[in-house]
Amino acid sequence: MIYSTFATSIYTPSYPQVMERFGVSSTVALLPLSLYVLALGFGPIIGAPLSETYGRHIVYLGSPPIAALFTLGAGFSQNFASLAICRFFAGLFFSPALAIGAGSNADVFRIHERAIPTVFYIISPFLGPSLGPTIGGFVTVRKGWQWTQWTIIFFAIFGWATAWGMSETHKATILSRRNKSLGIAPPPSPFKSTSEKIHFLVTVTLFRPLHMLFTEPLVGFFSLYTAFNFGVLYTFFASFPYVFGSVYHFNVEQSGLVFLAMGVGSILGLPTIVILNKFYYLRAHAVAEAEGRIIAPEHRLYPAMIGSIGVPLGLFWFAWTARSDVSWVSPVMAAIPFAWANLVILMGCATYLVDTYQALNGASALAANGILRYGFGAAFPLFALQSKLCLMLGLLEELLTILE
Image (cartoon, rainbow, N blue to C red; front, side, top):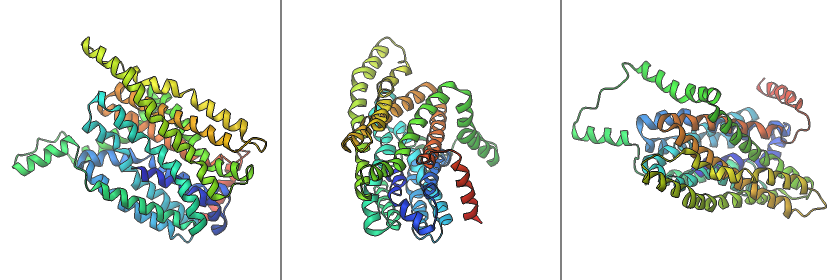
């Protein structure tokens, strides 16, 4: 699944070449990045009903080839509009596999065993984007911007090939296939017609998450918090090349290497969550189980409580030291606590929402979180390099000119 998010940021080192190739501004040239990230937010809407109806495995196998075709189209684009559109649909079809990972974990692991597998699943939205600019910088300089898209296809083929060795994990699908092989009639459907089933899927996968986002304070505020952090993370994809290029005169390849600090911070989040899970959550779970009660979901928030310190620390550190009279090492190091905090906060908030709302409502809560998170991730890079918000009007004007 890491290739889905890797594909977001590998594009960023190439946007100056895209500006030159298609004659657009820096803000417009970042649109293929933003549109791809925005499309990832629709993953639960597409992936959830498909995986619940046909199983997880078919989604893992079916969506990446379609996404790879749109990625191929992005690389062969002869105008900017086709590049932006192909990038959006590539993200749309890469997103289902990314979205149903939480469901696969829930299929295989019991509730008190999910922390460690879930963190490996959640790290992909952070580790993938940190590797993208590093590889993209070298590819752009040596091969050109089109090769950033070809590289995505290579990674997708590798990930797709590994999915062939997986087995189906969705319980209902496994039972349905077993009953069919034994000649047992399936249980009666709760839906009287196809339209009723479609109405249920649309309500559960789209309207319920949006409804919870605005009517459930827990979902709304936790989603807003994690979405802001995620938006700032994607802001770095536009601001890092600018800061290290203009202040420290880094070239494209050197600016790409800076993003490895994000990967280091994300990796440091793993032992943090493992330690907190072992010494706090599992102990509290054992006590609750001995007393015959269910552990309170608030015990999931220990990582988020600790990580909340890292976000302002990393941002202040970066902003204060990113100047010519301070070594480039300092702002690079500042990215580590920010990335670490971003991961552990998301982990704490996501597991808390799942434990609080349980099963179907928990999936809707995570879908709401994902929609807002990727929405912020798409919007923030567009104004990262702007000094005035009114320049967004210029962006809209330029888009209309391109479409005409």
